[in-house]
Image (cartoon, rainbow, N blue to C red; front, side):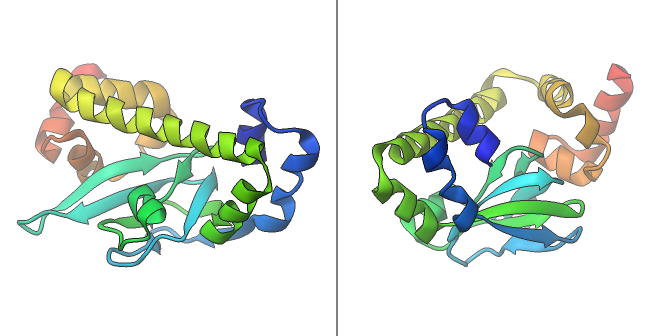
Length: 186
């Protein structure tokens, strides 16, 4: 987590050291939930090792994967974290996963400690917004094949670790269609 904050080149090193007392560590086993639907999200996690997925159930009861997060990425139910309303999604470890965790309370403490932390928060929020917008636009502009190719290009080492039905749901295609896409590409 500190390395991401350092890379933004916003915060002096001595202020960055405040993180050492505020970050906790957690391990999740494959299949374990970080957050359950209808809970309030009170923490943001940084993935040191592993894969998380966010999913929900639609009106027909189908499980829909809406997000994956990989090593060196952040994950939370961001709308629940910000509004403190209940989450509409579940967050699950797809493999054994190691996390760095910062609570909402600790993050608020950092924001109050100085303008640099507020700027970090703004930058990270902007980055998450851009990721969300790109995902939404990809469903309007790209085919399932193109979305798979993009995911493969950016996260090749993880693709084989994600069950086919989760990948298909995330890409908005059926598992059968995803199998055809994979065969056509390779």
